[in-house]
Length: 390
Image (cartoon, rainbow, N blue to C red; front, side, top):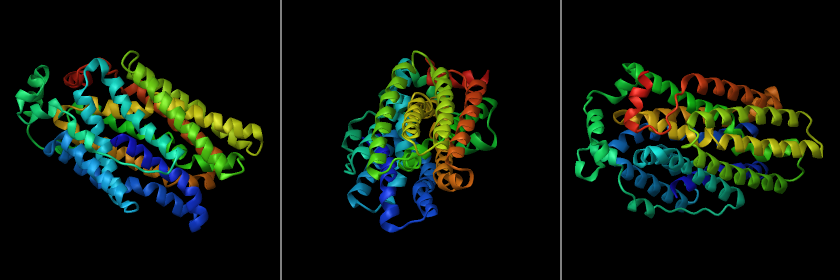
């Protein structure tokens, strides 16, 4: 439910902005600020959530996030609560899931987080009816690795006690170990975590999620209803292809799916730019819709679900909460940059130019994944230090 609500609220503005623009007379700059400001509001909460996850435990932090989400929805308009709740939810659904999943199924189970976000996106596209809930999280077991880290050995899985205790014995400041004096393996892990989160957002996902109705109108669709109807197809495709990632991430591995995803984003973004370059005809409208759907399929098979999976599984236990926070800060800052500049950038270099630019970023992502990100499929969380020390 946590991730469904995240997706629902993320996409709510996509449809609403068409009517906000008409009813309130907001300028393009104001629409951009409105679309991107939620990411800025998240930042303080993201950094604090790393501390909260170690003090309140993984499950306790999820409960807090769900309470905030429900309170924000019930307030129906007091939106200031939602960015903080989304930040906590985005961080520790992935951490919790990685820590409780066996290596052979970790990719499959972690990918379902993005599946539920996609369900939320689809619900938001289909209707504006909001719902919230949090009681289910109270029945969840606590992360066994967190239990071991706190000394509650009798409640944790026996096979991870020894390494988890060793991880907990490092001492010193977590942030100092992350940022001031990182070891060679931690430095390499940080590069991968920061890079994959940057490329996930810089490849243009929020330009599609938030502004797809505007893109469809630019292509030549004549009504808001037609543009909003096309966004339903975007939500359906996203949900279906996240399932593909869930089914194959443990058998094929993270790297093949990430590389395939990034290559698909390059091709679909370039096709979208080309389609918009000849906007106005029925053929260009069809090509635009097909390109957006192809982008969403390519993104959802790798970059979408696996960035969070990779982040949560490669960080050492002693650094996992704060390291995940750091990766999410980069994610949200990049998301804010894309969502708060898309319309202005389209005015400066044209909308086709925007999508050609995102295609170039995705090409750089291909190179980054190939050169910097080792395969993690089938490895235990305790083996990651050794993997990144090579």
